[in-house]
Image (cartoon, rainbow, N blue to C red; front, side):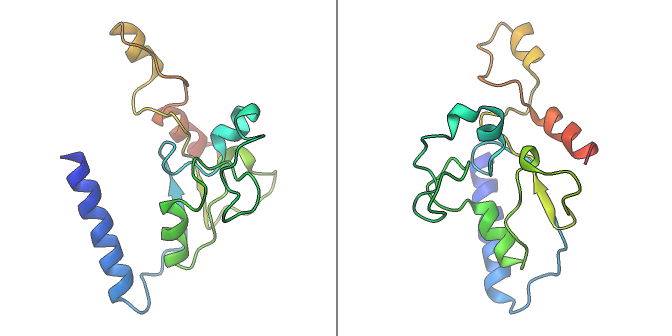
Length: 141
């Protein structure tokens, strides 16, 4: 069911962008998620993760912090709406302009907190960065 929703959402988005010469005037994107849209938060949090990574060598010509060799769907969405690629939250500098958006996604993130996995005696995720942590980051920006 989730896959069908994602495919339907993506197709609907692409249809809107292709059919409209002037896409809707969005001013910003604030992205939450996991590795499929992480633009560098995990690589910043775990520096050894990005150092020798080939990811980014094709498009960016250097390690990009993304879990992909090229751009991510969030990069294409931002481009389609005339917005810049979203900076990773953990790479923001003091006073950086974030009016056009920020990416809070983190590779390995889960929707549920680590406590849930521990209470249910499930194998905990590799990281403690969950959706609630990303939402807390958003509140503090």
